[in-house]
Length: 479
Ligand SMILES: NC(=O)C1=CN([C@@H]2O[C@H](COP(=O)(O)OP(=O)(O)OC[C@H]3O[C@@H](n4cnc5c(N)ncnc54)[C@H](OP(=O)(O)O)[C@@H]3O)[C@@H](O)[C@H]2O)C=CC1
Ligand SMILES: CC(C)=CCC[C@@H](C)[C@H]1CC=C2C3=C(CC[C@@]21C)[C@@]1(C)CC[C@H](O)C(C)(C)[C@@H]1CC3
Image 1 (cartoon, rainbow, N blue to C red):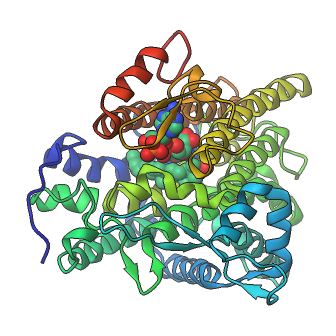
Image 2 (cartoon, rainbow, N blue to C red; image 1 turned 30 degrees about the vertical axis):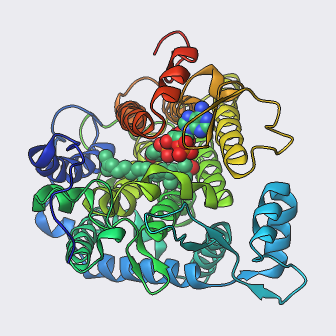
């Protein structure tokens, strides 16, 4: 039985804050879903029409959701194809080859099927967990399965109408799953518990999560949820929203009929304007393209998630279960949902500027994340060996030039610039599509403060020296 009452300071406003977030997060998600399909599409203020209770639940949505989770779990367990592994190895560069060969896990000449694995950070008991690396393969196979399903006549056009019940089912799953995880953690050894999330207060611990890496056999629940059902679901749904225009016109429906069916055509609706061609608008192409790049990138660099604080520090509780399974797919796709019901005109010159903004954001995000990952894996790698560093008492070093000498969280800066680029195609007539940018700024500012606290504990004076030499946190000369 695990000991109760760790001395970690309480975060998120303690039990009261945790309880409030458990109500507020699902409420916000449903508000956004309803607002996106309402005529006025207001971020602040109630949507004009609240749905009937039966619109929030359907057995078909439950079946679809369970099938989706089953498909993603099967793809998680599937070995990586040899041809696939070789391709990733070549395109991914020396870093991946070095890592995998060093651990004896990758030999492209062995068998046509191999489960490529990566090792996580060292745990309290000095052991390291192993994780499958086949996320990008899962994305491609999912896209193929969905494509096959649609061409075989699966009524995926219903997806738009099923979004509310799907969100309910995902929220319910997150609650049940978190409860099971909480109970499972009661039997976990102390060494398996997360640094936070073990305060002894059941509400707080349920929210934050007690066990660091809950597993069923070798199936890692947190790693699976962080990158698979929600992230892949997000782009599948957003792309589907993009294609829905085509679908509406192929079925012989007008925009007006489509919007009525989807529940958006109400007095004062902005949603009957410009989408008449039956193909996704330029704005929709941009939003989908940018988000597909983001998710594809996350799965391509899958092993990088093993060093994020979600995997190394936070327990697996309601916050991450709900965040991964419900919040990400249903709120991160908000721009696509908004454009589906409120098409916006976008001219080519403006689209080019937005593409440039996204490219700059991606360049900073990827450059900063790759530089740190390369450095953490092998500080003498020629790509990072010339960078200036600060030594710490732990034996690890901190980068103080390159991306990490510009601000203390250059990767957050890139991520925020991309967030702006995802909203700009939606125009400036509504605040709603900018919700992601606002929420994400708050999330990253809070996350940055948590990370600083942890780094101060880990590196002490060396961290203070880093802060002195790199005074800005996220935005140079501003913050
Ligand atoms: N789309 C979304 O919803 C979200 C996206 N993200 C993205 O996820 C990515 C990962 O974020 P996150 O895990 O929060 O944080 P980081 O990837 O920034 O990792 C922080 C860690 O990096 C190490 N570090 C910090 N400074 C230095 C330095 N100067 N030199 C070397 N190492 C350093 C420290 O760990 P150590 O020293 O132990 O290596 C620190 O704890 C980011 O790109 C972020 O934008 C994050 C949250 C949500
Ligand atoms: C308020 C609330 C619901 C909190 C939960 C937060 C989660 C939604 C996010 C915490 C960290 C995340 C990361 C990603 C998605 C969102 C969550 C789960 C991420 C998988 C997105 C893709 C990136 O490339 C990433 C892999 C770096 C990233 C990791 C962190």
